[in-house]
Length: 125
Image (cartoon, rainbow, N blue to C red; front, top):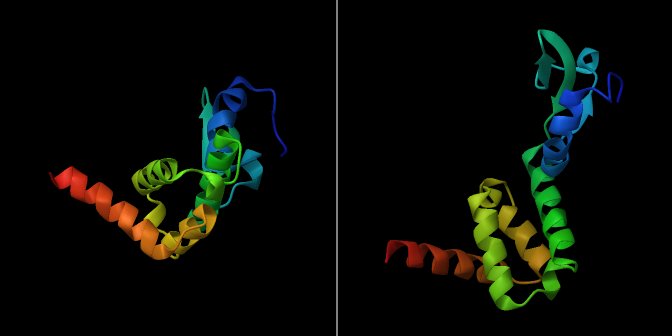
């Protein structure tokens, strides 16, 4: 990245940018879809947001880091909680989201749908 990497705005947004799997750029490198952040009227940094499918991979990798092991090694209850979290974050609106999550969890698509249906059935009670 070019630009003022030691600027307080960069330090403030970097954890969020990293958590989203986004990329920091100098404001001069920004393209039409990038978000340019200004500080006191001066463009300081640009953020390139990831594609949705890349975001899902990033979320799954972050979940693995949080649990300290591959998602496929989690117990059933924890996998169900992971599916609830992923649903809340929009993972299943991404094309092939169910397949991607099923692969990461080491379960079938049918199992992921069962977890989703169980959660949705609980909400409607």
